[in-house]
Length: 217
Image (cartoon, rainbow, N blue to C red):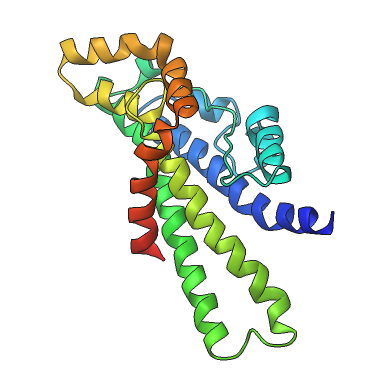
């Protein structure tokens, strides 16, 4: 029980920062392109309470943690964006969509810096005695933050709407192709579910996550 409580303390902060930062980025960039819906809804905020999704932010991560799943995943309540209000049309929509994954990449890079600093301090001997009480949890927290943010980035860049990658494609492709991609939105989550259940998801995401993890760590 103590191990589970410790794990929750170590993993909760990076998870919340990752999913909240992802959604805030969408809303902030949307506002820069003329849509203030997220601001008016109170969603451009680092307060996790306004972003928590009961299933994605609490139940799913807790279940994965308690069952000692080989991975941890979660999501926040999507930030509302009125795409027809964006200045710049489909290209603006692409910028709004890619803002979330880019934020996760930046958070992964910042966490990797913390990780390297902690490893350096361990090398200097600061990990012995009382210093270990701070450095050991920070080590695990930073490492998890790198991996979790990279997983969140890779998942959301999957090129099927309503995921961010699908919206980026819709924003950048010529109109006829963009229209065909947009039509997949009604079946997008079903397609994702098939990839998850068949195991293809891991084959697609693992190389991306491993590549960036090797660079950062």
